Image (cartoon, rainbow, N blue to C red; front, side, top):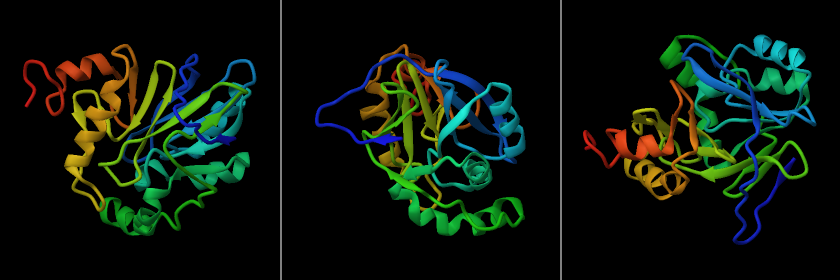
Length: 230
């Protein structure tokens, strides 16, 4: 379920449970299965591959998937999206700004991997800033539009958990030299949106290890403000 934002509304709430976090697919994209321990409803974030393994997780933890979401439309975050959409019946969501990148899906996979992945997943709903993907009446993931890595890149916030996609990494930031990327926009998204979150917020990125907003504010060599920052 997607609920639109209300003027001035900011959802805090408790963090969702991360049932599974694993690197999937040929480029080791971090895929997250998150949800509500009571309702057992879950959202799959960045389904970048290994669809059958993810289905096993759903069965193991007795989860019902209510949404599948990609933080952006690069192929390494989408490979398992259509398969999981078919198996679970859950809708697939991403930001409307990345719709044009879907046309590059097959070509980019051939360019970077030398393989044919077939057509891109079908998008059921376009997301926008402030939308919420719900797993219960009150709890879910809030959409933060954080462009720069791609025009429609989003981060997803749940309490003190931030799923930052390829916008912000532990000790790094996303590349901005791919179609639709912008280095200035990327830095602005981090400084003016993500760095305004609490220092205690845990950063769960699209690749690599976790971090915190507080650590990245100080230690990140690209956007940090402490020793070693550029």
